[in-house]
Length: 201
Image (cartoon, rainbow, N blue to C red):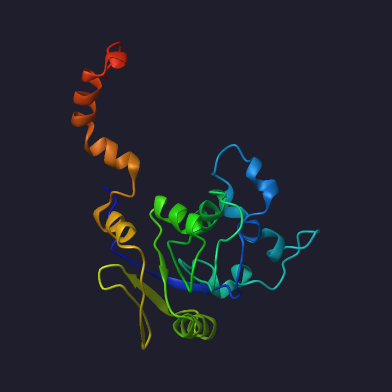
């Protein structure tokens, strides 16, 4: 199973409270049949004008390309409960999110993708964002065992619901891997179910 204990990567700061899922992934891209192209669309309307020209957005800056840690502020991921929002961030390259707070469904959807969504104080988030903006080459480590984020000379404490932390540390966030790891138990249970008697693979 896919255990998640630490994420180490460069960081990208996206400042502002109440950044909702419609800003993260515009509604017109929800019609995609699969998630395969979602990495092209995060913050699309804030990153590009109507002619496709780039706007001034952290996700467009050369120094933040390849970043794996997103630094956000209060109530990140609010609005509609579209799974496409974390999907687009993960497929762009985000492996962990550090914010002051989240919309509950957004944070839960992140965990379902194996992406830690941890909480830090507003002062600590501001310090992390300033560091990422001023020294984009610095790597950030989100440590789920120590429950802290380390970057340069900074070390800040973070939190998240223990059930979600445990799921990441143990790898049980990945429901497909969990089923495969317990395939014998699944087969045994299926054999006991009368409506499954026609086929037990």
